[in-house]
View 1 (cartoon, rainbow, N blue to C red):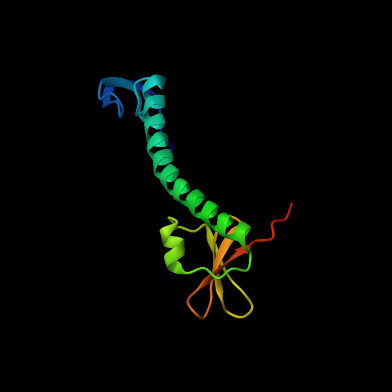
View 2 (view 1 turned 90 degrees about the vertical axis):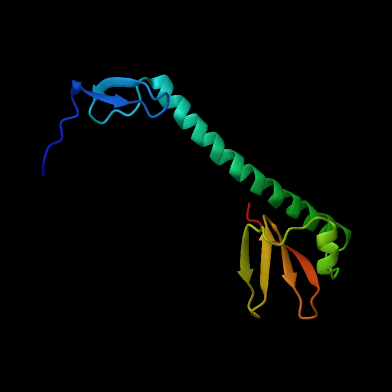
Length: 130
């Protein structure tokens, strides 16, 4: 195995990945300062956080819609139209399960939506272990 020497070398000028300034340093160094490194990493963390924030907002809205139907009547049959009219987005769920009878239940956190054979849905509460 070849040993790579990452020592400081003045003859190697590199361009900082954040500020685009030229600098000299270790062969594997990609930022000119720790400030540039932090700014670069913070920017990408913010982009990732914003992307997941939008999805999380939809999931919470879906959960709250299911909760409101469940609190009114845990056994009520709900049409897809009623769910959509309340703002439910069927594209976003946290997970799904299949019961012993082969029926699927798609969950938004601890509240799930089980599709019945007649096209209606019923809200299920997942048993949460404490």
